[in-house]
Length: 612
Image 1 (tube, rainbow, N blue to C red):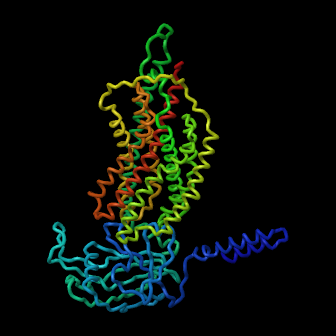
Image 2: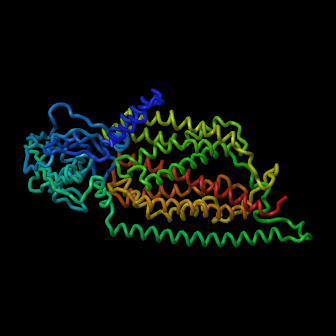
C-alpha cells in the first residue's frame, strides 16, 4: 500500500504540467497517510521481539467513573520515571492514563515463573491495598492495544447480608498469569488470570509484610482469529446469545405494541377530525349565524405568537441540532464510518458531529425567530449557542472539580479541556453564527391559514383535572418512555457499567419509535387542548414532547439505587450530573419533535376549514 501510494504520487507530479504546490501537497498527504497505512494491518512481530505491557488504571468495579492511576497503589515500578504513553482524544475522555509496566515479555517466549520484584509493604501501603480490595478494585492492562482486566485481591469470610466481618480475611494477588493468543506474527487475543494458591494475607495492617510480585506468560496459537476480527471477542462477551435473542424479542414486542397504540390513536383522531370537518364545512346558509364551538372557535388566536419567543426559538433550534447529531452518530455507527468499540470513539464522534451540526441549530433558531417577529437576532444567536453548552459546562466544571480533588483520572487534563473549548470557539460558535445569518436571510414570513385577532380570547379556566398541563405532560412522556424502557436498561448497563454496546441497529429502531410516538401523542394532546378552546399550544407542545426527558431522569434514580451497586460521592456526582444533562438533551430534542409535529398538524386542520 505504501509503495502504491508513492508511485501514484510520483506519477501525478512528475509531469511538466504539475505545479509545485501540487507536489508539496502530495508529499504532505503521503507523509500523513504513511502511519495509517502502516497500521492498517496491525503490528507484526519477529521471534523474541519485545511486547510491551501497558498499565492503565485501577478503580472500584461497581463505580465505573471512579478510576485512578495504576501506580496510585504500591505496585512494582520500573526503574526511573514512569514513561507515559500517547493517548488519543477519546481515551483521555474515558480517563485512560497509560504508563509502562515492569513486565518483560517477548514474542512467543513462554515464561513459567518470573520474579517481578520483592517488596516490603509498610502499614500504610498495606492499608491502601486492603481498602482497595474491600472496594473490589480491578486493574486494566493493554497488550498491543488489546485490553484485559483482573482483580487485585479478594475478601474471604464476608457475609453477603452483614458485609465485612471482623473475622474476614483480605488477600492480595501478587502473581499474574498472562495468556496471549497469536496468529502467525500478530497478537490477536490477551487474557490475565490470578493464581489463588499464591495469594498473600494482608489482613494485619500494623505489621510489615514481605510480598514477592511475579508473573508467568503463555503463548497460545489462535489460527482461527484474524487480526481484523480480534475485537469481536469483546463484542460477543457483551451479551450472551440467549440475552441477545431476548433483547431482539423485547424490542420487537415493544415495537408492535407501540405500532398498535399509535395506529389506534391515529384512527380515533382521524375519525374525530373527520366529524369535525363535516360539522364545520357542511353548514347550511340559514345556520351561518350559529355560534361556533370547539377548535374552530379560536381560529383568531391559535396562531398568536408565544411569549418569550427568543428563548423558545433558541430551544427549538438546539433541539434540531441534537436531533441531527443523534441521527448522524447512529448512522455512522451502523455504517461502520468509525469503530464504536474503539475506546472513546463514540464520545469523540459525538463532540465532532455536534460541533459540525451547529449550523443546523443556528439556522432553525434564527428562521423561527424571524417568523415569530423577533428583532434581537444577535441575542437569539448567542442564546442558541449557549442554551445547551451552558448547563453542560456548569455540570462539567462541577464533576471535573470533584474528580480532581479526589485525584481521579476521570478529571480531564487541562490540554484536553482547551481542545474542547477551541473546538467550540473556532468551529461550533462560528457555524452557529453562519447558520443564524442564513436562516434570518432565507426565512419567509409566517404563513398562517387564519388571521390573528388583536385582542386575545379568554381561556376557559374550568378545566377537569385530567386536562391540566401537568397531567398532559405526564401522559405525553409516559408512552414514549415505555417504548424505549427496555432498550434504556441496556444503554445504562453499557454507559454506567462494563458492558460493550454494539447493537446500534436496535438503538436506531428504538429512536425511530421514540420520535414517532412523541409526535403522535403530542399531536393528540394538542388537539384536545384546542378542542376545549385553549389556544396556548406553542409552549405546551414543546413541554409535552420533551417530558420524556423527565421520565428518563426519574428512571436514572431507580437504576442507581435498585439496579446497580454504584455508591460514593465521586460516582454519584458523575452519574446524576451527566444524567441531568442527558435528560435535558432529550427534553430539548423531543420538544423540537413535538413542536414541529404540532405546528404541521395545526396548520393543516385550520387550512381545511373555512374560518373567514
